[in-house]
Image (cartoon, rainbow, N blue to C red; front, top):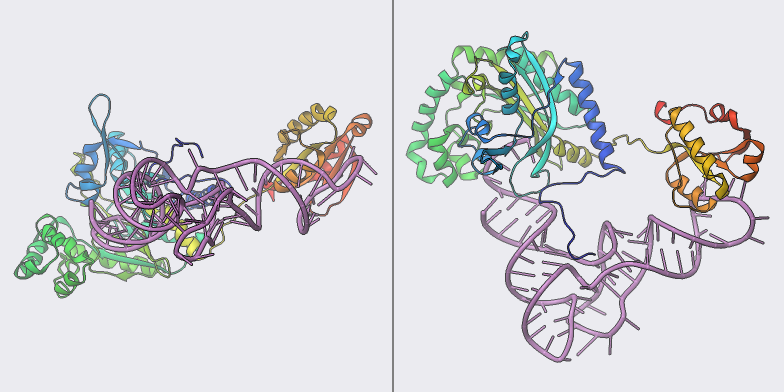
Length: 425
RNA sequence: GUGGGUAUAGCUCAGCUGGUUAGAGCGCCAGAUUGUGGCUCUGGAGGUCAUGGGUUCGAGUCCCAUUAUCCACCCCA
């Protein structure tokens, strides 16, 4: 090994051909197909944004903004951040490009890299990929249900089992302010017994105390009032409609009154998708964010969205031994029996490729025997052999690599013999 | 950010309580008589045992540091 090999930065991954990229392509293709089905259109936003975008939208007290952002100064001294999530950039693009002038809702999806500066572990990387959806411009429980339905359909189409959809309502600003006070007065007498994190949450975002994983905190707040039980009547109706819509769509869900999402911009619906079994993890989540457009100085634009963590989806699929179809093999391998046949082989290869066949040849001056081995490794369906005899007689030898049958044919009969293409089958 | 595990050929690993030329399987390359694959057989290339110190007559094997990686926590996708 060379002394100074350069290695990839921590928490990043190379996705290699030969099984890996093919899985990614498969997942991305099914996502695109389903998104298109639901009439969502793709949006591609920059991978970096002005830091302020996330500070204002995601919330300065959140972990994402507080300690996980890849932030740096560019050459002109501006503070730039590699996007840690997709909703804020999409909302920015929506406002900046005046998409609000289109008929509502604006239904968008994205697939792309996100960046978070964290210690890597299984299913958590510094650069990771999300598939996300944002439906901007309407306040309708139908919309919320649709967004959940897309996520579920994608995961089910991919073959994932043991999904759990957790839903909750975080209320609107009106009921939330009232509720926060109720919650604080419940917690306050015992505040000293809570974990240090919760003590901080008490002032910054008391709702998240309900989400603490610490056993002691869980016990202390087991009887705490839940926002779900203190919604204003409008919010309650909205949540009831959502549940009804999910029932209509045959989507099973669990109402989880302790579910609080980590980002500040959520209102009303919040949901999370979990996988159970030996790989247990949240693989996606989302919710409604009716106030975000205004936080960015735009006109109100009630919206819902979600994001799926693609690495986690792949890990979950693997843990459930779901087979992902990986296309492999080529149609034709052109082999030469004599060096003199190389020019003819190059011509033939170009011809076959132009006709749409996946085709290859040897580039290392290998013996015919070695070429056959190579063709076998490439999983070629047919090998076409050209040597001096064939050149003289305008013939080709075509070998079917599956059956081992081999025949000599006229040069112009090749396409008839090799038939349909691999990628058309 | 906190705590723990691991670090030997491209890959998966072996190397017993420190002992002299570092091993296997897979993969790669080449051969097994005339222009032919998949099975089998033979041979070959490839490692300063993560890096830097230390203990010792002697270290892949023990100690320390660094780095990387994995796992868990926090948090999240």
